Image (tube, rainbow, N blue to C red; front, side, top):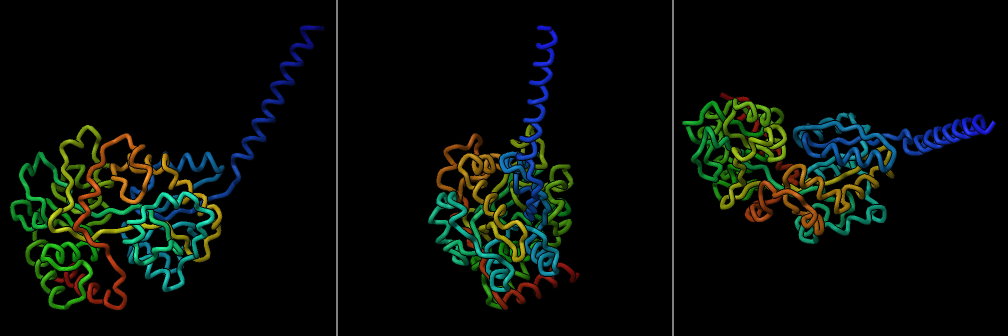
Length: 351
């Protein structure tokens, strides 16, 4: 009888454990989904997995290659997203067009870690009424050191005829035209027709002839395979594609003297988002110092916007915050954006 009782006790205990774990599992998996629309290679899987586990939700991640792509999709009604990450100029555009929900900072206490210097630069929304800074950085140039051992840290690298057929630049008009304007000593936000025409001539006659293509999606893969030796792009994309053991054979630079376009990408909640509360929770979670440090480590970023995460980083960043010193934030150009559109159409599609 004692043996039977002991067996029954064990079975009963096991049943209780299974029931308890089943109940726990239900509480951990709420069935909710957060729809995140973000740049390619921009949110580490490990961070998403931790959020899913801690909040009992599923994150659906869709990506885009440019602000223009993101904006066009949302404008066409392809929303359903709870969070998008536009750059500052597009935060301004989207806010003016009623495409964004207001941010409730009382639900994002970790916003206290955003540097005041970042908010001073974020003139499009310094009070974080419509957006919360995600990251501040700049596109730069990746160089395959095995193929290009000598080079100057300048946008003029794209004028090198000896590298013709081995280079690409982003399919992004504000970046490419901004680079040319900066190289010529002008503002990346210039709307001066003469300055813009000079930038057009530089791109069209000196840079474009040496490029395989303008590419905002596959440049990192092409660089990793050795097809391209020099690419304009984002460090995180390149380092994500290139095997870690080859990272010391890559140089990445942002032209320090010339500068170029700088961005502040920001969390935004699109108008009509179905999970506004969960969106606020994700933003707050992401800005937690240990989580934000994990994000920086994953992509080799410096702590440009966050006060406390730098001290928690485990890796050396691929570039330093000081490299952005001469860079200039891209601003909302309003109706003058059409000047850039016209130039870009000529660059992209005219022979």
